[in-house]
Image (cartoon, rainbow, N blue to C red; front, top):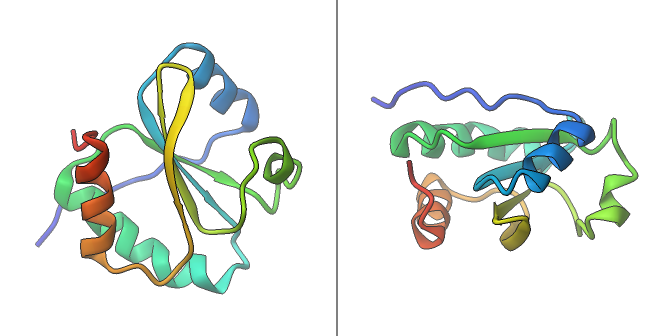
Amino acid sequence: MFKTAQIPDITPNQLQQMIDDGENFYVYFYSPTCVQCIESEPKLIQAVGELMIKKIVKVDLQRFEYLRKDLQIQGTPSIFVYRNHKMIKGITGGFKTVDEYKNFFRETGETS
């Protein structure tokens, strides 16, 4: 069994503040009507819980549509890794397995 993870929703202003502060974190971009997001989110939450990822937030792109262009987000669901004010890596697309998410977190070295 895994620890239940919580991924807090944040606003674009909060996201920008985290970037400006140089925090190291993941951001999950989703849409509540995206079928792939609905299918993938439980797997993402399981991976986050099993690896005890602490610095992950999510942003609703249906609510904040302008971020798609501003941040060059190709689709949902997407997960980006930010380090020292920059996006360093990301994945886009749904129906990932728990292991694929865990491998992504391990590859980026931010598993705690």
